[in-house]
Image (cartoon, rainbow, N blue to C red; front, side, top):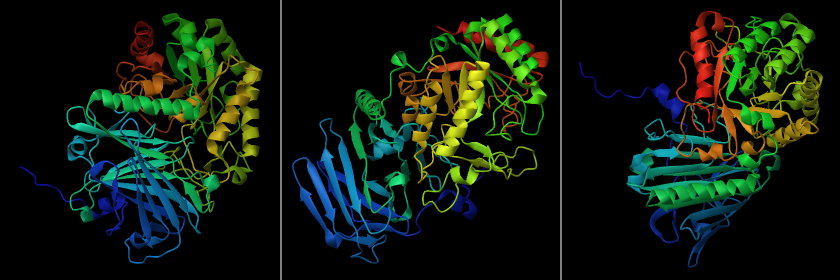
Amino acid sequence: MARGPRAVPRTLAAVYAFDLSFDPADPLFEAPGDATLRWGLQVFTTANVYALDPERTSVETGADRLTIVADALARVGQQRRGLPGRVRVTVSSTPDGSLEWHGVVDHDEVVKSVKLLLRGLPDAALGHGWWQATSMAGLTTHPAPYAPLRWRYPWPDDDPWPEWETPWACAGNAVTGALTVSVRDTEVRPVRLFASSPPWADGDTVVEVITEEDATRWDGGYSTPAIRLRYCSSQADIDADLGDHLAWLEHAHALPRWEARTDVPSWFHGVRLVVNVHGRHWTGHVFHTYDAMAEVLRFVANQVPGDGVLAYLPGWEGRYYYDYPTYRPDPELGGDAGFARLVETALGLGVRVMPMFGVHGANTAAYPDWERAVLRTRTDRMPTLVNKPDWDGDRSGEDDQVFLNPAEPGFGRHLLGEVAGVVDRFGVDGVFLDTSGCWFNDPRHRLIDGYRHLVEALRDGRPDLLVAGEGWFDALLGVFPVNQSWLGIDRVFRYPELLTRYGRAVGHLSMGAPGDGSTGVHEGGFYPGAPGPVAPGHLATVAVVGDTISRHRDEFVRRCRAAFEAAP
């Protein structure tokens, strides 16, 4: 029997709307050379949201520039005007035909962010849907009632936000016409893109670009990064705009080209396969002792050239995540002697070894000084609590895991001592820093500064050490040349050069092992199925848990050999 359209449940609307329940009534302004586009601005402090006061706003026009100056603000919705605050916004036409917005805000309250609202954008481009550099070919996102477009840079720390590895987006294509949005910032600061058709817009699509200040500098002033909008009539125009965006990234974040990187050991260029060899689960369940790991590497090296293999070791330090941030060989897995034998065995086979360390995670019982280093909310009023997996299967997240900021001096020193101690004592070839793709606007310490300092200190005097991370966004490619991918190793990006020009990606810790898809020490349970062909810029990866080789030998060997057959 045919079914009619289903009404959206009120509870679902509450979860996915995240919007005002009234018309904000923002005053809208023209843009130079564009008769249809209208734009507005909102200012967010830690206590209020403001619009411009149209009665206290002046407009200065020029041949290719428009400047709006508001010497007073209004309560959003325009019920009260003449409120303190000053905003100056300049909109200019650039040589490539883009429109560029830049705003400066002064206020008695602490300013956290500014929203640019765009209306009157071309329906043909918006109707085709939105996509970004790492979108799959043919895949677009369409805003819908109760499901607006919501992309967030640099890290989506709350569902259902999808990834946005660089703040560049496109709506439309060469046939429909397209528009691109690019945010050009010299720093790593939050950007959010939101598109919806709220009831008060009379069917019009409202596109919002929100930029946020670094919380370490929150005060009454904020100067926004440049926000660019460009209309594109051909694929060449779209390609050129993304090319301009990448050129900006290289300049702003000092991104080295892959071929010129000095932080990639020569041995890594010969790696064709990453083998995720799981150790000990949070519960204490053992997938492999160190001697069993060595046997896995011997088996792999009998199937493929060992000098093309990188062995990644999650859960090597004991109970995975439970013992964070203490890192030393686990007696139950074989202790110091067993770990030394494992590294020696790998060396003899030509296999490189990369154990896993957490760059944030800590068990409060294992690190008593956690409160000093715990990541804080933007207002510095409370800890930021994230990533509470259900490790033991009681269907509730555990209670003792916190995320710490490696930019806090005490925790930064602790991490450096723990990681460097393992490298120097056992001679491992690489280190993997878990959750480095996460980003938080911590008001006390700039997170990316902590990453940079830690990586630089680890590589100081260790030129052949690979320092890899989990997840990536544009600026982070300048810190970690190799990262695990949250997007999968088989997704072919619309613009692979966003990754391939600067770095490489490998399969994630949570990749299911051949057979039933066990994710080993990861909290994912079972993810069955093999990935498709490896995408440009990615390395083939296969996981091995306790019974992978004994029960699923043929499939495991097939995946290992395929990595070398497909390699250039």
